[in-house]
Amino acid sequence: MTKRHLGVKDGKLSPCPSSPNCVSTQSQDPSKKMEPLPFIGTIEHTKQIVQTLIRSWDRSEIHANETDYMHVVFTSKLLKFKDDVEFYFDASESFIHFRSASRVGYSDFGVNRKRMEKFSEMYMDKYEEGNRL
Image (cartoon, rainbow, N blue to C red):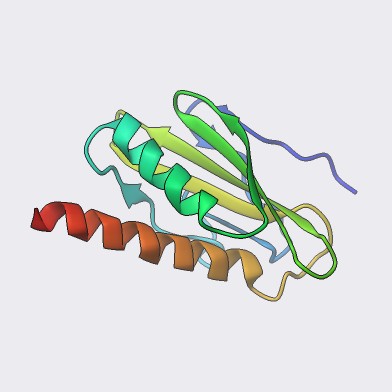
């Protein structure tokens, strides 16, 4: 098992490993790449929305919540596998960057991508809602 690297260094989340069980908005690999999400108002308001969305999911736990960084652990229902999801709130660009990766194994059958696609969809619904007001 390889050591997990969590956190932000020089404005970057850790790169995804070569295994297909990770997605990131900062990846250069098209198979792992996802788009960052725009802030909704201030960084504080944006973080509040992210926290609310995360807390609405079963088996999610916020492990770190700092000024520009959040670390969440998702635990699978059946086998109790843990996935690390990191959010970097880039105030200079007004974007949320994220990385979602399995802790163990090689393939995750697309679970991390599906989770972050769903999260992005839920978040953008809130973004569009805010722009309609």
